[in-house]
Image (cartoon, rainbow, N blue to C red; front, side, top):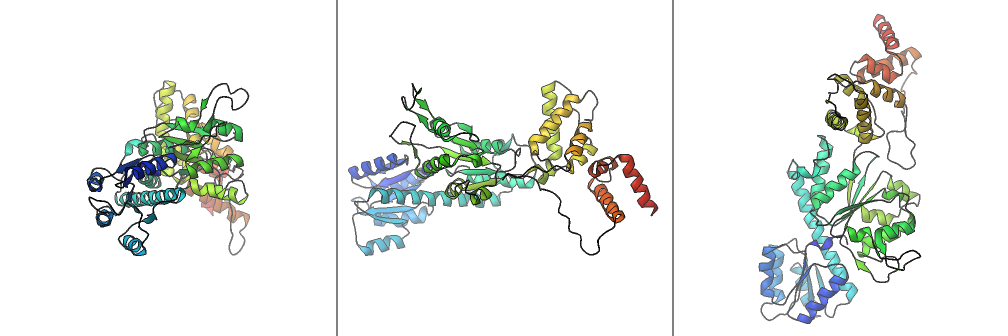
Length: 472
């Protein structure tokens, strides 16, 4: 389910019935990439041609023994865990194998749960080793290797570039990705990039889980069989089946109902699910990418989100910065949205003035990039002629929202308000007035119109204050 088995499990045993039984067992537990070799001489040539996830190795075989093969595998492919599975119960043999680098030692006949548990742990270790290697390469390589995956994300910000490199490093992992960030930061675009980078053959299927009750969530995700409930006159395929070998994007995961959280956790843990009305488990090979604008740690503390589900989902966390923390992207984003709006409205694209960019640089954008796009489209709808985009509509929004601070309610939001610490002697009103004027002028780049907007006064009032300050 979590795609740990994208690299095959290679089973090496001279007994055909053991190979068949092991392959069948792996398939029934969702580990459906297994290759059986009855001739151990074929193993190293096969590993040279294609990467392996795990090798399950019998020790005593006629052509070449597992005892001889084990050191060669460990030396040539140290990233591949080797699980020894043999009828020998001798402690000395087990100790010798572990010293040679075996990941685990299983004695035949192996209990089913013990066998599956060992293979899953080995696959997890293999995946972690692969991801660590990718992360090391991403730290060494300054640029991103697949810019086409991020072509729809407009940015030149260093933090965003670092996120892109991290996403490239973990994209082909089967582990879930948890994308967090305020509303309007572009979480769905990041999910699309993760899917593109993963190279998975299936579709990217999206579902906003906010507002779904448990029955609707189960039916939408898992589907149902005919006759499962009144009105179920035919079988319905759920989104998990639709996203097979692809990616399932669950948006607003922080709003998932408690009963649905349990079902999603079971899916992540076991890789199996039951359509409504069916008692036959189905396996799934789908990558889960989840997103939320909620502070999940806070919701866990209030008992509204399961800790075990959080840790399952956050194998690869991606936290998107708000627009106020990537103001260096403003010129790029502004021109991008101006061009987009001009094409949509059939107009010639103007350019933003330096004064407008300065005004926006002191605005916190509670709605982030989505808000900026709406502001630009509104301004373009009012634009008649000229090469410079008018800033009147932007000024009105900044004036109206400059003291606005969204309610918390567990969401990730801008700072909730100023907290001023006044050391030493308490200032007089004149001193405070002077400080505020100077600070506004500094933030506005000495632009009086923008500074007046920040102070909530007219430009004429600011001008009078500046004159008085100069006279003193």
